[in-house]
Figure 1 (cartoon, helix red, strand yellow):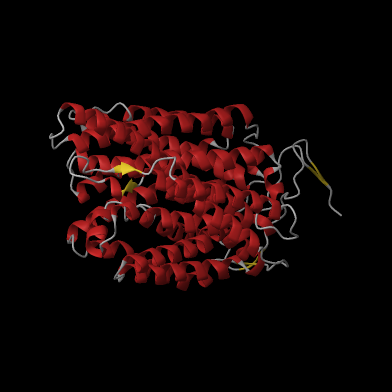
Figure 2: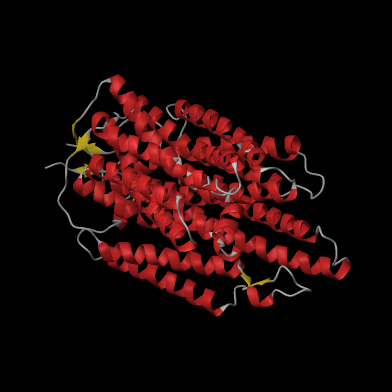
Length: 526
């Protein structure tokens, strides 16, 4: 018997040795394995943003109502985030390499369906399938890093590259989306989906050649938990999103922009209540089933819980930055789709710099200092975005410096928080640990974007009402009101991420020396 005693909170998901059972392990093979894993991660992450710039063209071509167009983005994020835990558990039970291959192959097939979509239902259905494929591939990819690379510098470097893909993929998605859309507004948007097909198929082909397989573990699937968790998140985000959608019955000649449904809308309120009830039922089920989809004991370790919470709040602010800023530079500053994409290129550069620096510093500096500093910097960037003045915007002084500042902050945050989140989890449960981490990122992004969209809609409506009393015929009123709503969303986002920073500074206590081993400091194994 092996007794594990820790000075920290009880944690029955403590570390054990990696369970890779076959596959390459030489340094050269490890390098190619990391390339393959990161290629798949880049594919699933960039798909969160690649369609953003093409949304107006998608809506025109497929005749999608503007109030439903946001589901092209949030539908993918919800399916991705809501099914991540199921994907992680499938990898634990049936082998991570096998589930990884199934995920990237399904993602490629769904991308092909999206690229040839002929109507709204077909496109949104393909986005849901893409989310399922991503939910199978992403947690198993992160778990494969945990079980393939030994603890210490090698794993730290691997995690830094993997974490960088989260920010770089989002920025590259905007650049690619702008370029592909610019090729031809009538059909260029279809390439934003079709580009994933060869990437996914190549990843599935090379996986058995480059990735080690892992043991299959006994257990059962918690389908009730998957249904309640995913359904609850879907209902909650739908309710929040609906509050900011425009009621078509309010669109008149005097009010061409219409009025949002608002927080008093009975459909929105019902959806949010049902969502909360489903999530409460999810927790109730997870406490009682023998093989839960999300063992609540994974939150028993305080440091891991802090990492999960911070990695839920931080991406929410980042998603909002990409969404609102991409619309701002197109609609208000008049940038073309391609120019808009390149406006975010500095984010990829800053993310690489931040992640690289963080991966080196994490061996010498405690995660609390790195992540705490990173979240402060990201909040400062969002605060300065909220200070942009309509009509006097300058990309090089008002946008570019703070895009870089935020990306560096994200790089400093993602690497140590990723290491803390998966550190000390038993390798047979690594899929759950990485699944929870990815779920927090995607669900946090979806919830954060929905919430900040509601904030932006509220202030946009108020500003339109104020402008209508002055010069109601001014053609710029819509842009002025949108800019006012976006800057308020940035301000709320800044305080969101500063809240995450406060949590990190006050509650995170793991030391940098602990991350160099597979067992936390102070744990006796013997």
